[in-house]
Length: 571
Image (cartoon, rainbow, N blue to C red; front, top):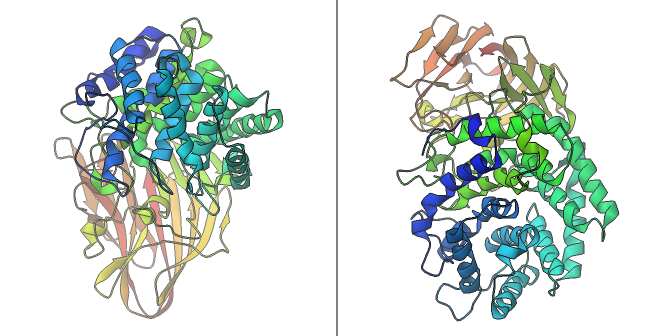
């Protein structure tokens, strides 16, 4: 993949070419009918037969705005015309088949519905009458089965709105119930929970807030009060969400579905597309462009320039059970701004820097404190009140802090400290294994300068943690009550230790430090007589850097109650 710069987004024509550079490598891998895209051999928890259908659908998130804004590519138009005909034809060998409860295909229906809404002249009108009938009937499958009780309700909403807008049968009851469920997930300040008890994470900009704006664009006449609510929520959300983005472009890795990468900026892209003026166009353009330039220049492609599963490099270790080879192309939502025509003021706007933001910001409705330092972003948060069944959720939601520079690490096993890779957490060595923080107790508190929470890594060990923010990082105080003798490791961020570039590591009696040209992290014992050590975790455990080192302070814990205190600094 070529190198990208901000100049690649100065005009609509240039930005169109960026999209085609990303998607053109897919063309040789579509089936003859166009209905299936085969780009890998790894599997997911859903039917293997669905995997090439998912890969077919997800590029539409970029192609639809490309087409609707005036872009033209005959090959892709023909692929998707043929593919929609074949995939929904029960008599065709590439038929996508009927659905079942909680079917992954429901997620992909939203991309097709998005195409019908924004670009019917490419996604709907070119189909034969039989093709339209087949597609409409296949989309109705989402109303005949159960959806996952989370952001998936918006897939049902989008599909029913699309069917309604082209005059086809839709399920008014499913549409109404879906909207009611989405409203029930809303909390405050623009933030939704992802289902009852679900997390507040990137599914807000991936789906919840974003699809609300799209609904408002098409249903303002039929449902004006709800549409106004969706827009008001989107405006509130943006005032918080901007704090997740660094001055250089990336936001911090946090939560599940990180393989969707630059979908993180989809919210701002849809704001531009739908005319939601959360920030002036130059600010929106700057956020979008810097984010895309950062991501498109990462080694996230394979040798055929196909997006890989992973984060800042290919990495199956961090993937979810629902990540198949085509899954990463949900990232194409970032290109929604291409739906703006060539004469739109967006294309004449400069890429403005971020507006003046507070160096420390308590995002009350997200239960986190954002620390902006040296152009980077660190989010500090207490953790979660309950677990779920997704992969590696302990690492994705339960660390003390998450960084736009350092990323976070994923445990390979809890048999050795190197496999555990416990960055930005407190790990206990007990009974021959390593245990880290998962859920917290309900009596937590978050303020602008301090977080307090209690947790139990394993029966017999209880921890009360206080995190105090400082100008150089933060200080962690842990009151540990243990029934057993064990060792505790209070760990900083995982810093790149690429042996092709200079870096330094230092260990002293009470402090450890890792530094390279991009930044540093240090962990120092202030109380509890901790020893400074630098851990070399297993390679490919970190999302951002394949080889890392983690500075930490190691404490000997005796039965009873004792307090340890660690200062963690970073840049």
